[in-house]
Length: 280
Image (cartoon, rainbow, N blue to C red):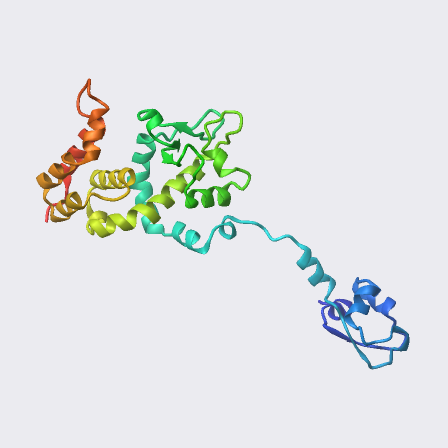
């Protein structure tokens, strides 16, 4: 049951009773005389009258609550748009099941013995590509980081400098928790790639997993789906889709890396996956 004293503490005003002084009132409610004086600039403390109302500057309880630091969570470190996007449960689940495992395996998702992930030069393209962090590219070797990557690192690991997370300098670089890297992969796909894919290939979600992986990989690497190939996939035309991919610069570039050997493994996998395009 609330005591009479606590009841008084929680009021915004108090009626002056016989014997009341600013000192006595301040002591009762756990405040200073200066607090009471500032809350009542038009009153003379020496001339208080019984029945007179005085302002209370706020209860001790309210003061304690106002001084309690706000807990920083991932949600209030993210923009509302980003947090809403990260909660797209259906798309996130589809991505985690169909795209993320393939992306992790193929694009340098390597965890160091200390449990962190560090930036490195792409093992295939070497100096031709920017700094990679688990397969995710920065620009100008870590000097330019996509804004959504910086936001996610700041939200999930406030103690990590995003630029150092993409740095190749062993004396200054910082590692990322694998979950942070997966969140960057997920956010990049959902916010940047998936809208383009769904526009180019409306049947994308109904396509087999390996076809989805091929479309996603091409979109991720080229920045957009191939228009003619996407149209062929949507039409269920397997041979046309394969022909359009073979005619692409990406196909030729990948094969150029393997001039002394067979067709590039990525090209073999992608052409094979297209055999499973859902027919109309």
